[in-house]
Image 1: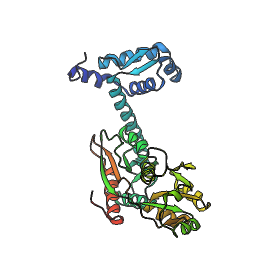
Image 2 (image 1 turned 60 degrees about the vertical axis):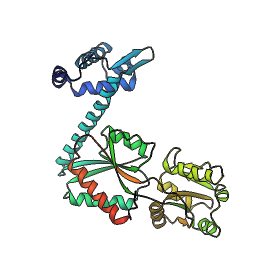
Image 3 (image 1 turned 135 degrees about the horizontal axis):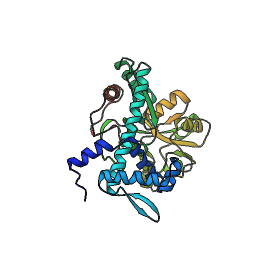
Image 4 (image 1 turned 45 degrees about the horizontal axis):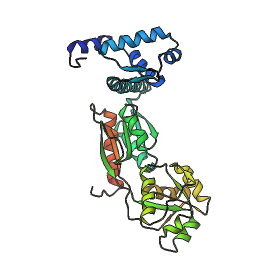
Length: 324
């Protein structure tokens, strides 16, 4: 059995472990076969077999289990793979930072954000970050749901994530700071909104309309489902599943039957830029809060600290914080 605290193991890994070894491990996990890895890497199977044997001798234990179904990581292999992926992403970040420096900037920041973050808020935070960083930062913004973005934060392909806190999320190795809360709003075309506003909220009437909702198991979709069920009504099957605000607004403004529920700040943004209308209904539920997620390992870079400070300040200026 391997002694993980052995100084010899540390010396062996420090002296012999190279980036190509880490890339090989990820290829084996992806393809599950040394033959396919050899084909993908334009190498021979004996060369790949020898490279894996060399790797496993460094760690002093098997990293993969061999079976008729292919190769699967051992418990140790999973740990090594997780770190390998993070180290490769860190190298990619280093390359991006080097390119940024070559172009006269200081560093590059990778931010993930869910679709229902106000563009006005995110823009203000980014502008303040760039000003505070003396214009020497570059930024990439990646969009996705929280459960899509957080694994990318964990494996170091993202630096920070603005997402929605949920009890179903895996928060291993992550910390979060609640920024603000959103109330839900029903949106429709102006004509349909005026029609619905003439009567009280009626879930039996609403279920007959065409709904645009996010994918199943996302926080807003689950809240909509729960409130229909609480009213004794079978939840609607959406005609379109999407969180794209562009598609959402286009479908709604051109239809007399289409509705959706979105956060209040997003609804107000869509009213301003695309002509949808808010139906003046009040819902007795609150969406899970918006939070800034970061990793617990290591110290945040200066660029991450700048963006965190800027985002916190903008949220405090724009939103009235409610007690947790």
